[in-house]
Length: 224
DNA sequence: CCAAAGATCGTCT
DNA sequence: GACGATCTTTGGA
Image: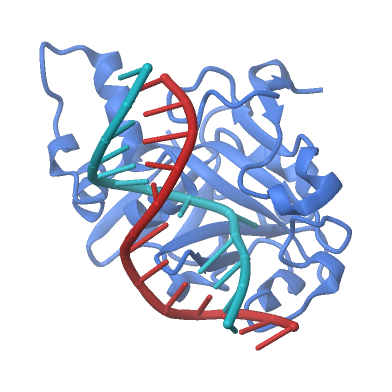
């Protein structure tokens, strides 16, 4: 049902606008091992120079953050805690270092491959008495977190700087956009150091979706 | 269910 | 030398 790639113009807007628009689109990585990917269900906006939680706060420009200063529609991948990777979508106009962090996807394509990469072969197949919902929820463990989804999709620093509209790492329109009343928002995760920006409700997710990471934090509210 | 702690290393000061 | 836009395991209630 996925028909077309997201056009590069889609990414040329502020992170706060792009973030909710990315919900429901499909993130797909083609590799020699196979295809893996799924539906984006949770994201965070990082607004750049004036956002104390952003790597590009104060126009900090280093080898790591360099790709954020380039044109929109490219991948910004960085390593964290020495062992995990996080995937961002660079957005806004060239020179404006904003990005959207992909925090969770619902597994759709290449589930056995994703399970193997996550060392969770037990999730490759449905189990039990055909309880579909229960199995769906179990599958979420493959990609309900920014580090988890990168591992499941085979994303690491090699993908830093890749073009989402032309490379093997792509974002595709799937069904219709998620309506605003099905989007919830709340404070971003893991940025307690960011002073006033700590409380900005710049984390977006699909309401009641089972694959959202840490579904219980306080501070969730309806979008808009 | 929840909190705490350890793993482990690139990046920047 | 310090510190993460995280994940997993463990131990207790």
